[in-house]
Image (cartoon, rainbow, N blue to C red):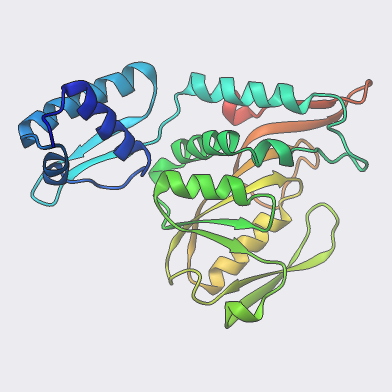
Length: 273
């Protein structure tokens, strides 16, 4: 390979790091790939780290030692997070978003890859210290958000089903009381989906009464797993008393305005950033 200029090396380094968030790369592998000394690669990474910090692109983290290396950590600044959430609130206020029964049409937003990726990085930033072993979600609307959150953490995503399938093998099921409809429902997860004593992060699109999230806690007890965080895209203001105490929502839905528009705004957690 012909000798690369520094700008060319940095483009390759940025691409390799950012396409695989939180994956450890060794300096030796980078040096072999780019035909440069490890000291040169270290200088390139220092420049890349400074650029990421300056423009809020994420974090380049170096681990010392023989088994160390470098990794990219997705990170959203408070101002970036507020700007994203406020922009999505504006989209949710568009005419026709409120469906019969007061439900919000938001599937088109969270199923857009760019939006889902940005929200996944927001959830990863907010729950970074929890360091989950996997990201859980409930079928089906929460899947895009959970998948992008799992990508940011470089961990598997696991989907809880309403009903088990033969192809899942032996499964565990629990019944739970829906917080909004007060109807007993079921959730099922294959036995091999989560290792015992795993740390799990639950990500969902919508939270009203909190019954589903409460059911996830019950299901994880059957796996001897620990729920280290719960993140939701939109929560409703009512009922004020949820069936769980600890969760983090990005947007609060307060009802329907006089013109039929959704009354939505950044949640108290986002406003406090």
